[in-house]
Each structure stands twice: as C-alpha cells, then as structure tokens.
Image (tube, rainbow, N blue to C red; front, top):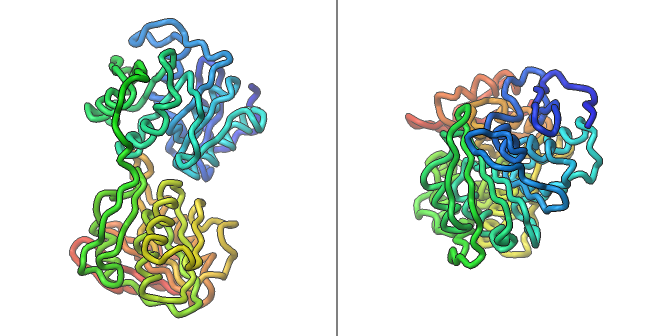
Length: 400
C-alpha cells in the first residue's frame, strides 16, 4: 500500500506487510505516544514466521476469516488490511484512528470490517488475534463471546507487553478457549499461543454484572447499577464517584444535562432521579460504558423516560450543538491504556465549554493532586471549590 500525506504526529510502523504511518486519535502534532508498540510488532512478525522466539511456519491468512480483538489504534488492522480483517473494539477513539490509518495507507473503504464489543460477533473465525486489554473482565467477556466462532483449526494468538500479561490472563485463555502457552519475551513483549478446544465448556458468561448502590449516597441510594465488562469499577462504586454523588447539583425541569465520560451512568442516573424533567445525555468513548449507562438508567427510570446515549469523542465538535447544554457532570480519566496523561481531561473541559450555554456549569470531581482548578480557571476564567476531602475535590466552573 502506498503511504499518503503524513501528519506530524505519525510514526512509521515497519511490518512484514509494509511500512505504515500511524497516528492515535485525535491527531495531535505534539503527541509523543506512538500508535503501536513492540507487542504489535511481535505478533505480526510471528504471523509472518519471522519471530525467532516463537519459531514456526508463517500463518497462511489467504481466504481465512481474520478477527482482531482490542487493536488499540488500528496498527494490526492496518497492517493486515489486504486480508480483510474484522476488528472488534470497545473504543470509539480507536475506531476513528483505525479508519484514519487505513485511509492514510491507501486501503479501500471496505478493506476492514469494524465491529464494536457490543456487536454480534462473526459466526466463524479462522485466525483470532488478541491485543490483551487492560481490563481482565473485558477479556473474559469477549473470549466468551468469540469462543463459539472458533473451530479446531483456528489459530489464536494474543499479544501484550510483559507488564500486561499475567498468570490470570493465561488462565482465562485456558479456561475459555483451550490449552495455552506463552512465548519468550522480546523487547518486553510476549505472545500468548492458544489451541482452541471447541469441546471445552467454560460455563456461562458472567457479564454484565449488577449490584445495588449503598444507602448513604443521596437520591441514588439503594438503586441498581448495571456494568458491562470493562466499565470502570464494575464490581463496586468507586470512591471518587461516591464523593461526587454526595454533592451533585439539582437540575431544573427541562435543563439539558450531560454525564460526560459516563461510565456505568450512575452520576447521570442519580441526577435524573433527583431532577424530574431534566433531559439527560450520557456520553463515553467506550461502547461497553454507554451500554452500561443505558442499562443502569433504564433499570431505575423505566423504558419511557427520554434520554440520549452517545458513543463519542467527549464533547468534541459534532457531538452536541454548541451552546445547547445547561449542566455538564464529569469525572475525567487520567490514563490512556498504560500512559498517564491530561489530554483527555483537557479535551473534555474544552468540549464542555463549547457545549454549554452562557451561564451553564461544568461540575468536575477529581483527585486533589491533579490540579484541575488550574485548567478550569484558564479555560473558563473562574473555578469554585464546591467540596473537598483529603483525596478528592468537586469543582464548578461557569461559562460567562
């Protein structure tokens, strides 16, 4: 494939199938994090029969159904585009990056089929490539969903950095798919080599998981939370959200409220319970999270209360109309996979300012040490401390 124009943030990715200029999404010329790593390289070299420590013949991909699970920024999908891979991803940003990287590589628009983790899996998979996710629960859920599509001749190869692959990771492959072994480490990356056993009975998929909230957190006390696998704090209420729930504002009837980075939707659901008539919009870049938020909201407010559920890049242009929102509630993440970064929070704050009407408010909860008040003052010209404890603060910024 021919390389087209190369953005400043692109980094060349050399593979047995060619060299590709890849970027994360959204593209940022100041971005120093690559869209690929040694784990992606190792897996592709293994498929081509070039990885000495996982010695073996090249894997024939011709005419075979190739599924790629958890491809973070489309590196694997782009490299294998000539084989029509099916990408399965939880990340809206990752899917956007994949489309951009495929286009930059000169691939046809239909070169790859992009599915979400909530979509119906393929009926048959001949080659399953797994980029091990940070969430063991998400891996468990997806292996359960994909296992019926495998057959005795299927090739299953996982990959990740050595810090991402643990004994528990290998046990999941072994319990759900079949006998599993690992390769030697190369450049701090490792492969997982699994032989599917269709006769294996892994038991039922335990996801989604439902639990009741505690009784001392305001309007949401005792209500149900539904978590699909991979959603933040899927087993229990995290302490930051718990603190936020004790200090949420009440929205007026007809007010448009956005639960930004909604996760399982408990913050927006609590607001809806306390503010009848408010119009709730739940937004997250994770398909699993948005599905969780919708399930949580419906479990507590029924099928007829109107609400929107959007998988999107925060409040970037095109998500909601500028000046159309009265209140944004936000518990921003400060990790992107294994990297600590404030890029996501800054994008959320700038998007919130664009979406808010004059007089609209952004309420943020965060770890005290992250210093969000500095960013909010720079962006909004104001920031007030609503509540705080030794670990967390709740901040409010008003659009003037």
